[in-house]
Length: 590
Image 1 (cartoon, one colour):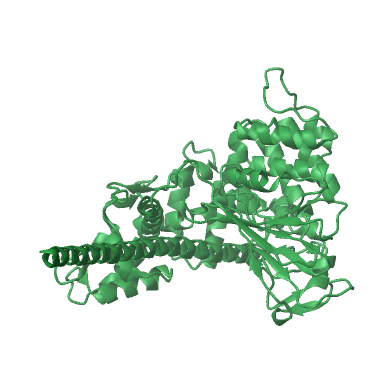
Image 2: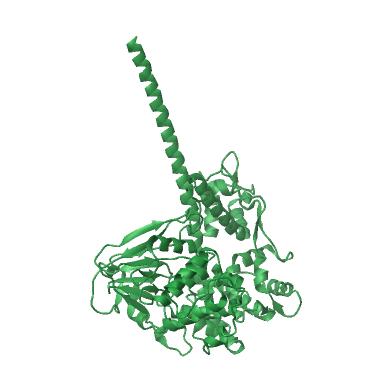
């Protein structure tokens, strides 16, 4: 009897073990599919961001083209040339012209700064911004003028030294994410004489609290100019701010004095140092190195002439030493292989650099849960130490499937908006493949057409279940690529091709027209619109007939006064998701 009981227990143990293995295998497969979905979603974000960066280069080339071809721009509005291609014609008004007429009312209950600034003011700002208070415009202007005054005295590269007892902390892109900066300070301490920082550019844009980050960093810099170091990134740029949100943030938070703040800020940007050199051995610079980095050029370039990274300086005085090649910018730290006691001013090629480290400090960059942020701590003779973090507003991290669903839904949404913006081109490509006029394509034909038109280098086969419908044979109904989504037409009579073109290039057009609108009135003349569009049409190789643009310009001039409110017009172009299926948690890419 004892043997029988033992046999039953053995069988039960075997069944339990098999069940555990089945569950384990299922969970491994489930986890793998979730991670694959997350990877595909991040690939969408990264591919679209890369495409946008290529668009920025195209926009940069357009401004060069504009300067060459828009001949009467010099005579009609020389301030545009000065703003884009060199220093301003006359220096901005002095401090009192801006600040003296900005009063702080007694009813203001936000932080009040005392000049000269002290450590107490840093604490005051941090506490106020935690409570979502807004710093009064007078103090913002005061801080900007003070910062500019100090920056103008600084060289292109800041030299700093560390020791075994004195570390320095290096932070990358923050992109308006105040919570990340506050978390860094919570974990690593506020800037001080014994706690040095380097912030390597891209303080602003994308996030909602760019001005708060700038004010904390600038005030800290003014209190500790030898211990807090700021490098310029590609988003410390008035044209990038037009595209990625900082300009809108300023004008929203400072409705009365926003234009003055933007004007001074545009000048402050140009005086930010290019990079920081640590212990004459480590170069910290936003953008890394090209095939050949000429540090001698960077040491001597007149950096204040670089009004925009989208338009490197073409000086009005013809000085050849200030011409720089356009580069893609990312926060990068570059330790050099060979120590030297001489100035880092020779020309260096990539093989001369021992290690390239990219540091990015904005967590949840694409969507909540999409990535961690990080910073680096360095001290003399020691290996760099890396610290990672992720801001979350919940006390308990959400389950992986919830985080993946949120990231995936957001990624698919912006991808579908890219697809609808090329609807006419995609339909033409589909029809070329569909020789039988069946309205269907094979998976490979559909994927080829999508990549050929959109050029995003995405795994279209894996993404197809979220983008199109298939029949029982696995063929794709290609018109389902555009189901439940369309572009809202602000002018109903406009042709679809024109609407798609305007929607696709709306960010570029907004930057161009804002540059023309140097007084920030939001208005340009109909003639300026026509002239600029014809140049845009020619440079971007867009096949839109002139009569369509003329008709559109007439319809945009609502009150027939010869002026166009182009910002409001471009805002009217938006994608409407009629049936949003993206939030259904049960669906997936695999």
